[in-house]
Length: 118
Image (cartoon, rainbow, N blue to C red):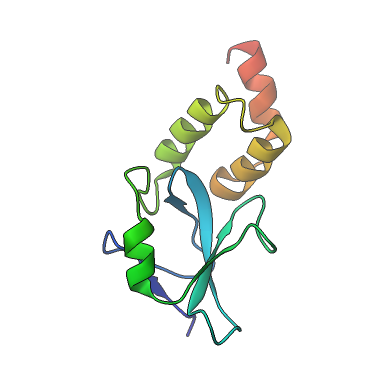
């Protein structure tokens, strides 16, 4: 059975689930480090120094801000991506990779459709 984490909003996620934490898509990663119970790994930048370690779920609850929503539907991820494309903190390569993860597909096709207004 896969490890799980209960998010502060009551949802339970596995390491395969993508969820919105403080305005960015993350995955839950159980920790191998005895100092931490788990990490949250940013979907595009994860797997290194950008991972956020948590000693326990209470610390996650303390950092669960108003832009944290948990898992989203495909339509909600599409809306997040549309909004993120207007934010200069994100580049197109990053957003195309996020799109592939949360919506499937190539990301490039969606970019072409956007440019053509389809």
